[in-house]
Length: 549
Image (tube, rainbow, N blue to C red; front, side, top):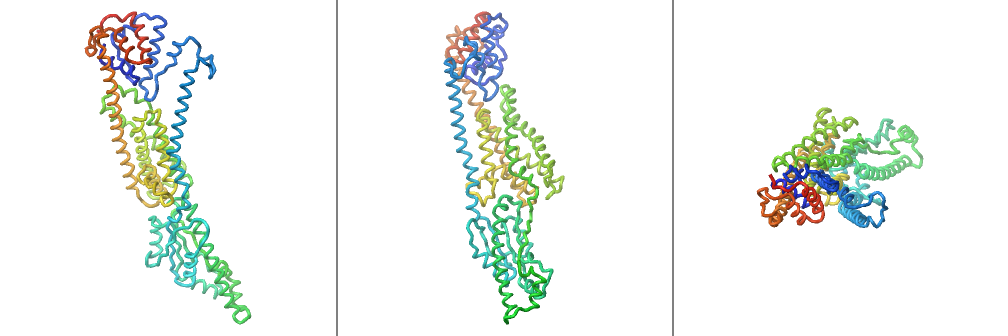
């Protein structure tokens, strides 16, 4: 018997995946010899098993084996039939184990996502907000005092009072918001008090109360934070403080008009001409520097990244690799595992990028339509490669049977740091800064909405993940192959240790008789491999008696 055929049989006896047998003299003669019906059925069972042996994570088929061993039809029993006791026990054990594993998966992953959302309202004080008084008069001072003393139930922003000298011009304020140094800025405009007084004095119909205060914010920085906290809390404090100031200001003005106990008809006529100088007196203008004006963008920056992971997993979970793996040397095999996925991710990521284009996402905001599409495709490709190769690495150790557990973990731990800004998350979630989806999401925000540009850092993190996954794929593949070889060597040594059963023939030199080789496998392989060897033995007894050639 040749060493390659021996190794194939050893793998079968050990329950390992093995390449299809290239054939030995014994097996060829056994295949060509006339077979009894029972021998033909036994050999057919072994052939069914060998067809599935190369598929990772798949157990050998045992349907025909049981059917041959049992004398009853498998379709005539209920689940609680006594004839199914052994199978029922195995079935319930598998269900129980799967249930326990899924429960463990729940408690190791879901608390991360729940935790990312549970404390956001308690951490609103981490959102920095500025108040700037450029008026320096009654409106500015009154608003500053009202904001500093404002008290209301619920979360509050972290208000800091800045002088004009500290922040510079309004353009500098805009740049500070776009550079993500601050979330929102309230600016009381210069001479706001003087403009209001003059409008009342002359009854100006052109006076615009909303020009007294400007509010700058950046919605596209994080639309959930701005929609749930920044805008509502800023509006709440402005409404309360401006109404309080307008009420006090109107009272003072009417007191002056009625200073002699009689109303000043001229002043009242002026108020009638310009009622906006009394109510509301002062107001504000919200200036959204980067509007989140494409709702479909959430598919690209958050939810769509989950789909990207799933598509990557579908590619990595392909079992076609098992068709060539048993016949390839280690280095060509590693090149295959690295190059083929990277080539396959190219059309997949292009298709994903075209989906963004088809639904009219504003890809031309920062780099123009053509440039924005190409750059977004580039980052989607890097993201898919980083995620897909990490799955490729782990599937080597976990096998496709347990790969979904890693997939779920990868999704939850990548998505959790992205749902809210870091200021509204526990410090634990700062790990997201080095994870693929966080950096892919921020890169796409920059491309779509011209937010703060960290594209270099984002690309660096994604490339680092790709490099790490290439290393781990190589390492894990080497470990698995080495382990398989050790198992094969142990089985070969076990066969060599029983060489007396081969009638003095040497296994290494390909000597021995077919029946003797099957006898040794029957003794060494255990019940399952033994039954398969017995089938071969029955066939060998009819036509496999001569020495190997």
